[in-house]
Image 1 (tube, rainbow, N blue to C red):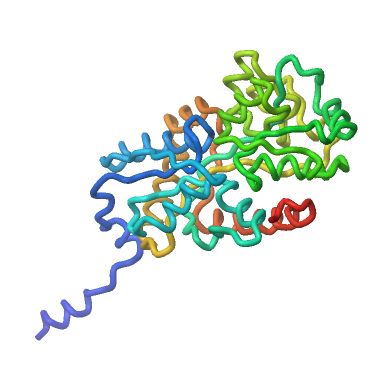
Image 2: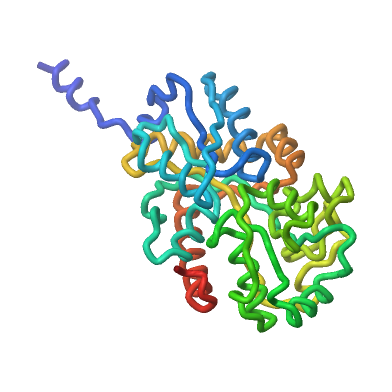
Length: 324
């Protein structure tokens, strides 16, 4: 009888931490879904994560690019068409989350369709034109746009992508009607940069790192970087604020999310792994190679940040007419 009493008293429910440690996951290949073209910031960050976690967990992690719809085709595949078992992970960014919801009256996906895991990285956006373009800085370019709005063509992955919101916010700040300019669709940052270099569009707006290959090869030039301080990659390029532009806040990020219904224990295991990864020297070096900055936020903070951003972008979309 005594032994039975002792046994019963020592039997306690497993804590969440213990459950996470005992979780038998992963046991097979994981798919990281990138809803944008290869070579862009989301894709490069995804491959860095895949390399790190495949070694950490001893299971293959493959990156699949499913492009189209401004990131929505790949996002729908990962969040709606796949099982919520932790083996399909969306590598998302503003375009497929906050900006899509803010810019669409009846969005295919909302942020409620994401179970956010962690934010991985951030990147400062920049404004790029052809190398031989007549403008030497963003102030000169903005004056030209004010005088010739109908001549401004710019590339974007979609009507509610990061380029669209950045352009809309900038045009609003200088008093230009967004709808007098023309958006040209692209498949991602590398395609946008190529369109600028080839003279197919006047302006490209993506991260500094995404433009770097064509900047370094002399095919495009940066007029401004949108960040609190000058970017270390191109310290000679002044920020938008230095050139007299206030209130330009659009920034780029990339992070991970699961389909709703994915077990919390799996989300927690990913979140803890990403937190550990952000402190890994080799990971930091890899991020530097792809010209991104560490930007870890845990699941709770990431979820809150995306909600706040969605509210801000919704207001901008309504004011400028981006929302359709």
